[in-house]
Image (cartoon, rainbow, N blue to C red):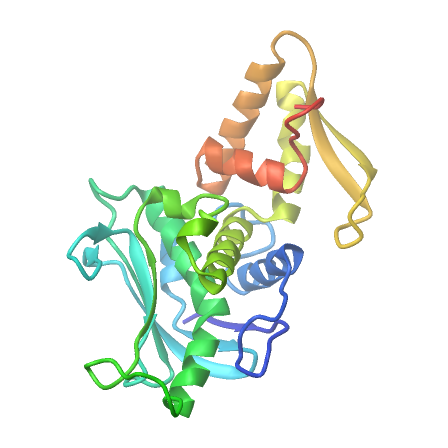
Length: 270
């Protein structure tokens, strides 16, 4: 069964320490390398479901994944998925995604699992470290006698590129940003997307150009797409649909990744 080994900059409490988005990209890319081949476009839900162990920053733990039963919040409302850790089950994180059906499409199930896997990678090590230390001297215990750690994907808005900061604490906000960036980079990685675009764009009269990168943290050459003529919009739309089919996502997901990687621009070049 697949086991992921990952490392990133972290503090003494095993929390991410100023991990930037390009670093999350690299972490997701390395995780992907441990799951599928370099020339694979789509990553299947079943492939992610087979992950059963992780070693993150030297912390080894088991991951139990379930997609068999509907997931609900504390009030009994249907949610897409959760990631949780209970210190009474040491060294084990749990990830549950509601089954594919009328309430959850295959793509949303895949996106939810990838998003919550981001929480496993970036949040579970800190939860486990906390659980192993026990409560602080002045910490208020829950009625059950132990603490439980949980993240939740309640709906499709939660998988948006940027969560609503006002609705979350500082730590929660950045945890969601990390999980969403991990999700996008895992399912549609920069390198492979650029390779596929370079392969198929000429079929739609879309041109791929390269220019010096303005960001010192990304490759020295930055690609971008242009489509000329009256049919430019429709050509680009057709390209996105082809890319979506190749990567097993929808065109909107592709659009976000194209913008994220600088391949599509809202002003000037399309």
